[in-house]
Amino acid sequence: MTDTPARLLTLLSLLQTPREWPGSELAERLSVSPRTIRRDIDRLRELGYPVEASKGAVGGYRLVAGAALPPLVLDDEEAVAIAVGLRAGAGHAIEGVEEASVRALAKLEQVLPSRLRHRVSTLQNATIPLTRGDGATVAPSTLTALAGAVTGQEKMRFGYRAGDGTETKRLVEPYRLVSTGRRWYLVAYDLGREDWRTFRVDRVTDPFATGARFAPRELPAGGAVEYMTRSMGRAHAQPELALEVDFAAPASFVAARLPAHLPPTPTGPDSCTLRARCTDSVEWVAVRLALVDCDFTILAPDPLIAYVRDLTGRLGASVR
Image (cartoon, rainbow, N blue to C red):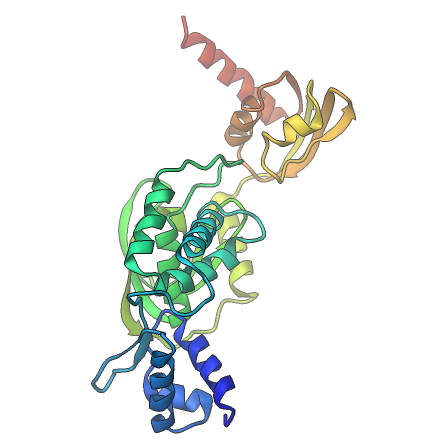
C-alpha cells in the first residue's frame, strides 16, 4: 500500500481493535516492510495516538489509553456523553443498536483517559434505567472484555453460573456475541468440555483475556446464531403458547407494559386484545400480565389459565 494517508488510516483501524499486533503481521497486512511500519507508528504518535510497543519474540504494538484523548474531534463532555450512551445501549440490550454499541464502546474505552473513565463510571452508577421486559442487565465492562477477546481471537477465562446455580470456571475460545433483544449470549468453544457452548453473558463473572491467541475453528453448521438458537431450544424445551388475552385498557397503555414480542391489537378506544405465539414459560407470562396493571381476561391457553388460578389461590392465602 503506497498511499501513505490511506495506509495510516488502515493501520489505525487495526490498532483500534483491543489486541497486540506483531510488527511482522502489520507489515504483511499492509504489504509494506517492517521498517515502514515503524515509521508509520512514529507518525501516529506524533499525531497524538498513544501506541505502545513491547519487545521480544512475541512483542508488538497496541493502542493504549494516553494522558489525553487522541484527536477525534471530541471534547471531554462529548466523550463522556457518548460513552454513557453506549453503555446504556450495550448493557440493556436495546433492540437495533446493542451490537454496534458494544463495538464502539470497546474502541472508545480503550483510549479513554482514566479521569474520563472515572466520570463515566460515576455517572453510570448514579443512574437507574427504566427498561421494559425481563432482559437481565449486563455490565458493559463484561461485554467489552468479551468483545475484545472475540476480536483479538484470545482465549478467555471466566466464572459461570448455570441455571441451577452451579458455579464453574471456564476456559474458552470466544467466537461471537449475540443479542436477542432481551439477553446477550456468547458462542464459544469450551476447551474443558471440548465442544461448542452458549453462555448467557449476565451469568459470566470475572472475564479475563489470557493473551494466548487461538486459530479459528469452523463454526457449527449454520453459523453462530443458528447454533445458539438450536442450543437454546434444547436447553429450554418450552412448548409454544398460543396466547389469547383481552385487556380493558388502550393498546398504547398495554404495549408500554409488555415486551416487544407480545404486541396487543386495539379493539376499541379503551380495550385491546393479545393474540400471539411465544415460547416463554407460563410462569413468566403470568407475571408479565400481572404487571400490566389493568383488568384483563385470559382466554387461552389452558396451562396458563390453570397456573394463574393456582397462583391466585396461593397469593390470596399468603395475605390473611
